[in-house]
Length: 176
Image (tube, rainbow, N blue to C red; front, side, top):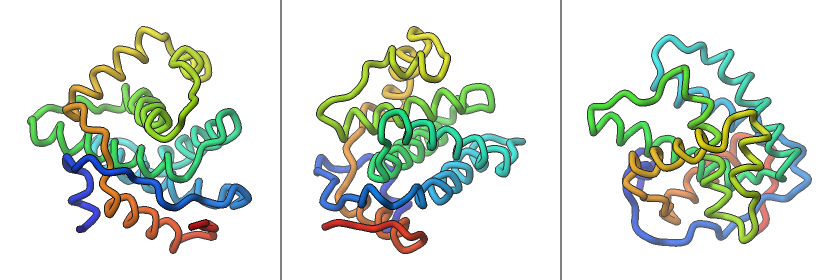
């Protein structure tokens, strides 16, 4: 399976068989920020990937500080974002824009955390953290779910490909 196949609807399999050592000192943030910057930069015309990478890095650092963001959640959020972009292209819709890309990032990470964690903050916590209204966050989450046809399962092989890629690019310690 290639990573491009990972972003389409996938079977209902569990994803996490590997975890990242907590003392990886945020080495993963620049790598993840670059991936998200590339995805958004390609999907939203006229957006500077350099500005995006810097903003996304700060966004990821804030999540890491406030909710102990995990690399696994970043990879799942990446799959969700790619799936959203792919589905909007298939449906010949252009929903993602420079005006809503920040909200889409919030949504993909909140959904990734909901998938990975047994206990997660309510949407109101994230709305307050990022200075958006709870109504906007809830509405955006619902719209996102509709666009991806409620497909939140991540294939194990797809997850492993992304995990191996990020592990090989940086000094990310892996526990198996």
